Image (cartoon, rainbow, N blue to C red; front, side, top):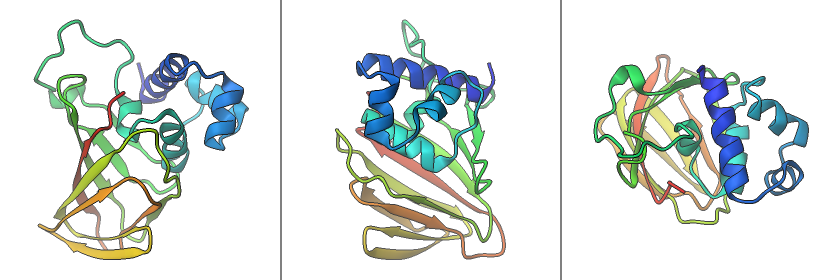
Length: 188
């Protein structure tokens, strides 16, 4: 199953579990009904901004949208790199890889490679649950703005924020930045 189909199936299952119709999710997320339908059918590759709007409306993290819909009977504590879903944002070109074993821990890890000069803005602030994230810079530099506060992160720096305000990511450098995101409170 390709990543678009995986996201689509997971989105459909999360929407159904929340008891939301396509219209209700569209209203709650600000994403058009037709776009949600295309995503659920695996016929559209959504941007990071769209995934953020949908995950926020569903009360989950963006990382949760990359998990398999079928929860394993006994989750494995091991996630082999070949089995870790990788996705590229069609708007900015940033690449994210869900590192965590699905369903095995309340902590989620996401490895991100962010192209130079690119930015992504997640305007969605309200969620049904508290989600906290740590951003640990591995290589390069990032400018991260959370609400009205801006930070410049260099390799080795770590930023802790709650996903309760708009957050903007910008790579001001001339080379890709790589960072690890750790999320808690993010699984449904």
